[in-house]
Length: 419
Image 1 (cartoon, rainbow, N blue to C red):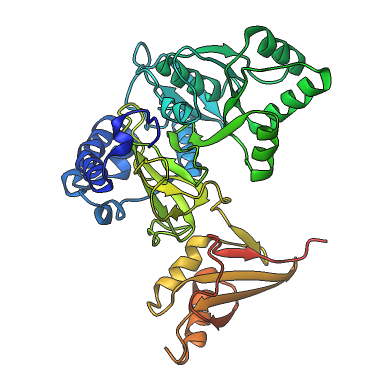
Image 2: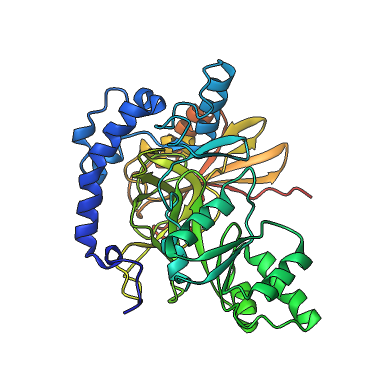
């Protein structure tokens, strides 16, 4: 059993699921009442009827590009609402800071301590009360630095707000202050450690790190460990806060206690079976920015079993790529949702994958579908007609054995030569 952040991490899976679903109707009603965008998006939805995952799956998924478009429309209309109707709080004490992510997408910060719930991830990475955290995330425009700092303060840590760049100055501060841990991107941590080794500079207290913001392959994790730093990663966004975090077990990422996660087929809102790769969709219980079924655009999958550390929440495999696989074929955009529309008409199909091959301007579309042998004679011809009807493009169809398509979340594979 590990030293957990709180007892919520040790709840039985059934009790956790019941608690999240019990809180869901009130959160949806709150979003409808306080966030004008959700009043429109969820118009006619009976919040009290959304009490299970099946009901939740009937609600629309709001993806980041849609949120950006709604914010831009609101700003263009001169409404004075830079958040596009998604914020449930107004400016002032309830919204001490505002941030911008690329787009730009503007995000409010509420006044609650540990607003982005990062303390749980920091605790799992070994940070404790009295530690000094060296935070090398950006502090201006985007909220990454503030996200980590608020979590560190909730743990009782002190923070050195290093920000990005200035390698020599950061290294000097690490040595002079004796930071107990690093928070930032893994690549910059390696730069700092390499520079310290080059200078013969000892950093004896720097033995832990929480990293995020980019891929963290095992090779990089091992390189940091060889320098004496045990690093854990976390998965968080400016919109949602903490989604999941790594533990000392190094087996996937454990979900945060205050998110309701779904894995859906890319381009749709349809949940996939546990273990299948799909898009990460999250509902948070943040009253200030109440995002319901927010599509992150990231691919992942649920891992079976429980974390060896004793934490009982669901685990995911971590970041596995991007869900937006929109591809241009013969001058026309083909979207994952269109492939899903085609497949949905044929219940005998399992998974499907549209492979675009050939050379640009000489494209070939092949829809590969998993169908049991001997089932649905004439399926290829009917599927080809449906594919042309939906995409306005001709394509071929190939049956494959159930379970033979890769479980990587790809609905559209661009296999063309760009040489």
